[in-house]
Length: 239
Ligand SMILES: C[S@@+](CC[C@H](N)C(=O)[O-])C[C@H]1O[C@@H](n2cnc3c(N)ncnc32)[C@H](O)[C@@H]1O
Image (cartoon, rainbow, N blue to C red; front, side, top):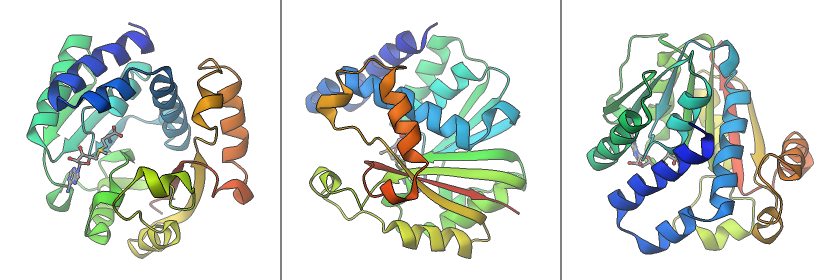
């Protein structure tokens, strides 16, 4: 099954689960597909999925990221935890529909999450940390669940990017505070990069997999441009 086929299946499930017409229209755009594929690229690279055996997705929602990663990395075992039971059900339906055998999804709260210590080579959490009231507790749970040398890759909306000031009505986490919370939880090698630089009008004219990804990748590695991207990528390692 191709990335696009899985993404379309995912959209049908998510639309049924949310019943939000505006969200559904956005999900069906080409730009949404591009954003999904570029998120998978960014996460896979920073989480070093090519060397991983077992990876967790915290707050997997409707499973958009974990399912895409599982399809692209069939040798990696993915485990997910998500607070909302209706999202867990929707995402499980998609796992079954796609015939994926390397994904296991559970309902649960990250604050209570106590997997076997050191269980994961990497933990991925996309667009979740900015919703959490008690990030220090969540970060320490993730730290304990990683093996030494394992990586946390967390994506949050970029508060330094002006368009996000209108896109998000609730407060966005200060990236420097997030980085210091990660260090306080014990992580080292904490870095912040940004992603999704291209304005919608430009990105939607560039084919996925083409120049848009090259531009994103080059700009994402340059610290002076970090306030331009719509998303911030926190990468942190358990020593
Ligand atoms: C914006 S969604 C992101 C979903 C998915 N990671 C993605 O990128 O498409 C945020 C998700 O975090 C989940 N979440 C919020 N608080 C949580 C908690 N304490 N434990 C686990 N999941 C949580 C929500 O239920 C929601 O599905």
